[in-house]
Every structure is written in structure tokens, then in C-alpha cells.
Length: 405
Image (cartoon, rainbow, N blue to C red; front, side, top):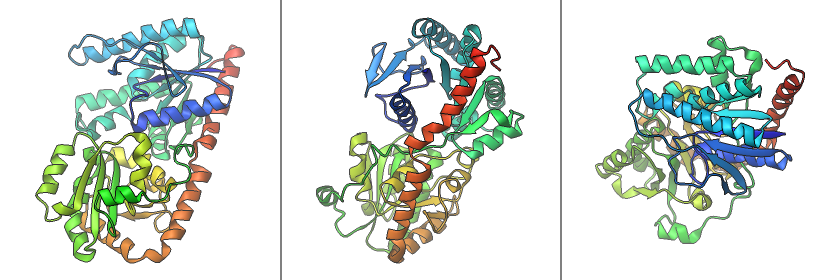
């Protein structure tokens, strides 16, 4: 079977999006399939076409001339359609697998219909909600409504729809999309990358001045919806009960400057450390110095519907997890069993939850073991990938019979 993945961006860039793509493609290659990806014109990393990264093949779509929106998006879809059309003729895939955002699905639909190839559309987040989450959109605006209509139409037209969680599946069904063609392919962890966690790096602990400290950490992107401002606001309250508490923030993003300014004005400034972005191969070192990974996502449509990847990586690393009680986290974390949930948008509640976790270390090892077992059993990419196989086989069979939906 030959599968072409249609992507917004890819390796060698590092993001949750590219790590999920890498896991899918590598697992499919391990099954003996021919797999490649093609990125759209929004991918602005200078790269050859084609390019091989970590044993994965990626084709590229040339960037387009900058023009105002919505003409820009229209031209992006047209450019990706043209690149896909040529690629289908040359590479001859059996299956198109378009990944959000919806612009990729719009281009893929044209080519799938033209060549009679089945199309899976994989939604990792609704584009309209992602725009609200990253501050480029406003819920209820005309653009929000239009994007929502495009997303719904794309799901209706796809032969099958993959979503990363039950929240997205339920929302699509409420929009009238056929439940029978929607399947859940949840976020998972590549245990080849996050396998047996290494022992704590004593040199790193010493270099960071964390010897004997109780370390709270966040490793990820600094978007507003991640609620890191609440975590910083909670630190003085945590330190009042746990004088040895430190906060380690690893990553970067749009909120970095604002968060640094907030930390500088905090009475806990000496206990808040910004590390910046680190190479992916170094991330395990930082997981190893953190006692509790905190994920204080704010309550909004995006966080209620979408499950994040980072808490799973923390569980795989046998780290304790504390997270806000929003829908995306509830799909991953069982309160008191695999992690701790606290009310969102409430620094005081966040502080009390972390204080309580540090005060009750007796159950830490059991919780780490149970959480790691959950990842190995239910969120391991080597098993998650099996969810695609029956869908591909069904669509390919219908195509061969001349009855493609």
C-alpha cells in the first residue's frame, strides 16, 4: 500500500504536529508500506524537493507570493492542488491522507476526486478554534463562522475522518457528519524515543542550581491557552508552603516575553527559570530533573475538545502529572490514579493541588507506574497505528470494486 500524507509542515521542524506525523509515518513504514509526505506552501523552511529526514520522504510545495487574506488562502489551496496533482501522477499513491488545517483537505479533495483516490482527512484541531487559541481569531466572528463551515464541509466530503480524541468526534457528529466514517486515532508516544527514562542528570541538576529542590516543570510551547500565567501566579503561594519549590519552563512561543515580564515582577522571581527551546534529543534530560509536570490549560473550546501530547510524554518518562480539569485532559488523566486534576483558570487551586502532591509522596511511585502502564497499553504508537489499517483497507477495497464512497 502506498500512502501520501498531506501536511502543513514537517520534520526537520520540531513541534507536536511534526512529532505525531513522524510517529505515524515511521509506524506505517515498519508495516512494510510505501509512505511519503507533501507539505503545503505555508511550510517556510528552506528545503530541497524532495527531502529525506530521519528516513522519511517529504515532497515540497513552493511558497506563493504574499497577498492579503482571503486571497492568500485561496492561492495556497490552488498551489497545493497543482503540486498534489503532479505528485499523484508521478508517485501513484493508493491513499491520500490529508492532515489539518482544512486548507490541506480542500486541495486533497480536488485531487482525490480527479484521480479516483480515497481520501482520509485527519483533524488534530478545528482551524477556527486553533485561531482563537493562538490569538489570531475571535470566536463568533464572520471569519470564525466561515472557517467552521469549511471544516464541516471538508469532513462531510472526505471518505473517512480521523480525529485525535472523542471531543472532536462528538463535535463532528453534532454537526451532522456521519458517525460511521469517523474514527479516533489518539495521540500517542513513540516509546522508541521515550522508552526507559534515564536516571536524573546530576550535572544538569547542579548546573541549574536545583540540588535538593522540589521542581515543578512545563515543557512545551508558550501559547496563551496553556495557562502558564496561572502557573507563575501560583508560585508565591506554593513557596509559602514549600520553600524548596522551583519552576522550570522549557520551550518558547508567542507568550514568552509576557511570561518573563510577569515572572520578573513576581516575589518568586528567583525560583522561576526559563530554559528556552532545547533540541528534541535533549528533552529527556529536562524531564529527568522535574518532579511534577504541570499543564494548567485554560478552559475554552480548543482545550475542551483537543487532547495534548505532552502529558503522555511526561507519563512515559515516569513523571507525575498535574493538569487543569478540561475535557482534553480528562481523556488522558484519571484524577488520583494517573495524575491530578485541578480547576482551570484558578492559580490558588493550582497551588493547593501542587502543595498537596508534594506533601504526599507515599503514592508517587505507584502513580508513576500506573501512568506509564497506561501509555504502554493505550497510547503507544506501535499499537495506535493499527486503527488506520482497516480504514485504508476498506477504502482501497471500495475503490477496486468501483464503489468508492
